[in-house]
Image (cartoon, rainbow, N blue to C red; front, side, top):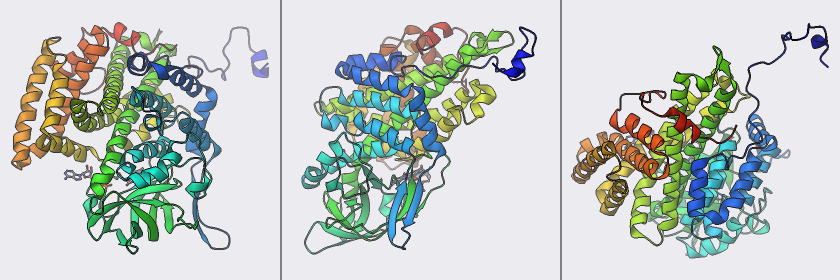
Length: 562
Ligand SMILES: Cc1cc2nc3c(=O)[nH]c(=O)nc-3n(C[C@H](O)[C@H](O)[C@H](O)COP(=O)(O)OP(=O)(O)OC[C@H]3O[C@@H](n4cnc5c(N)ncnc54)[C@H](O)[C@@H]3O)c2cc1C
């Protein structure tokens, strides 16, 4: 017994007692307590449910949560040279990083739809990633790049035949060895250079062909190259016929370390478990992927899939932030009442819950279109435009959402031992990665101007909920005329279209989310979402739901944990 306590009169509180604090949020199942995720998995991929539920349980455990903290508190370390002065260019990680990576690889978050191409595989993978990303997002970077790389590698059957079996392995092998000697391989991506990231045509890295082969020597740099311990990278470089895509492994085919020199690791605002490096290629060996001069067309499928993953990551950030806020509010009292029972806090939490559910439903609808697009032209066209819309909107909303959820914990939310600062620092990254906000909105515009099928596909989707809510009907009609006008303006090269691209994307995102809530959430949730975001757009912060919003029903549908 605490000796200080023994001296107190019975019933007196010690100065050291922690009263009115929420218990740690451990021992809950991230999947089984998420009604929107559960419902979507049962609809699209019931076969995957036992695996998803099992991962949800593991990630709610104290041990798995500790991995996330340890991997971020013990950042990766770069070793450029060995003790004899030889270049080694290796990065070492804390064991917690390897636990996270192993768990995600064994669950095939890096490969599921390619390794098990069955109906609902993308939805199942999205659900798995949604869980894993809630626990720790840094390690999702190489997991996501590896998953996405397969889509681009398939443009080159020979490369795919060599690398796919390694990538599809469910064994995590962190040893730094030639890929052929390992039981599993991971893939990264190198596009961004100092002088330009969004505009990859400005890349200066050069590729010189070796004889008449598909092999090249690469000279130049990449300003951002995350997860440099991946086994190979899809990179862009200028070849004689123009910008081309290459697969550049860490080891050459004759078993030597490739001339892939890690200059330094970035000191980042967040995402600290993950190593993001600056690299130089000093005549590094690489093999052409796809056709020379068509690098962007080759790598774009990888980019498309990583954008899906940015949307999943943003939904995960909002979900975890919401759950933490709800948990706190259910245990913390102020002014004689639990926070969850204070009317204004209920408004804030319900508003956060609506945003999170809208995000979850959006990313799951998007993942479904990746499943359906092989067999359906309209789903293919929908996936094309909805990826950009969802990536933009969910990533933007995550920043605001996590900031507000953090405040629900008061000062405790600002302290590192809560997961909130980590979520907050992570949030802006997904908006920057794989096309920053403006670039993504310009991509929406490009789709509208050049791919009429994508316009019809998104409008068709919005009209699926026609007649269910008059505000949504009016909003959809307005979105349709905005889209049609933008298509015309963009086709004529009118700058007005670019200037309005964010507004247009936002409108489409909100209409998409409202329709999804009408179909897959309760009337209380859909009504409040539409009333606050489509009918009355005057509440600029969370916690501004109109008086009529049924906060009790919204909160009851948010989280079935305790
Ligand atoms: C932690 C981290 C890890 C990363 N890892 C990788 C990696 O592994 N591989 C990789 O290749 N890259 C990586 N990146 C780079 C990232 O993808 C780029 O930073 C991003 O694409 C933006 O490019 P940029 O930084 O050159 O910005 P810029 O291209 O200079 O853009 C700056 C701003 O201008 C806006 N902008 C650009 N063009 C226009 C336009 N025409 N109209 C209006 N606005 C415009 C952009 O939206 C952005 O807001 C990483 C970045 C970070 C932060």
